[in-house]
Length: 134
Image 1 (cartoon, rainbow, N blue to C red):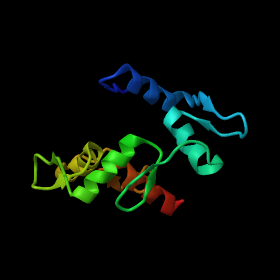
Image 2 (tube, rainbow, N blue to C red):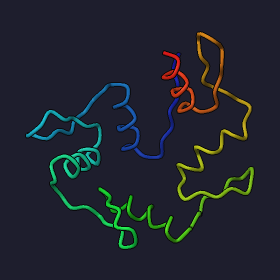
Image 3 (cartoon, helix red, strand yellow):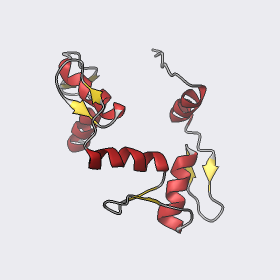
Image 4 (spheres, helix red, strand yellow):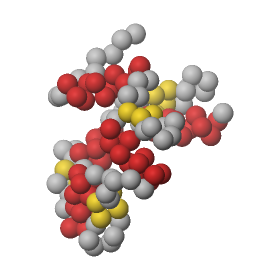
């Protein structure tokens, strides 16, 4: 069975392909850690080796490995939710949160347990179920 995976950028496709090939081209010379994305290496260097510069929220002092993550975080302090569900009045801080929410409006459940037949709309719920069963 093959699946078509669509992306808007070549970079996103390369990152997605690494899931299937287990390619981890980013590493650090002083440890055995290997990473699929440079941003994951950067976060590792900050957390584990205290190398690099954190981006710090000036409101709550929470630290982030990237400026983009800090900007996304600041939306929460400002209570700005620009992503609106087309099926209900719920609003979200990020496109990812909206995408995660959308399956609640569908009867289609694409994840099914091969042992008991229980089915799930979201992969994360299916994975939680599996981890409790086995």
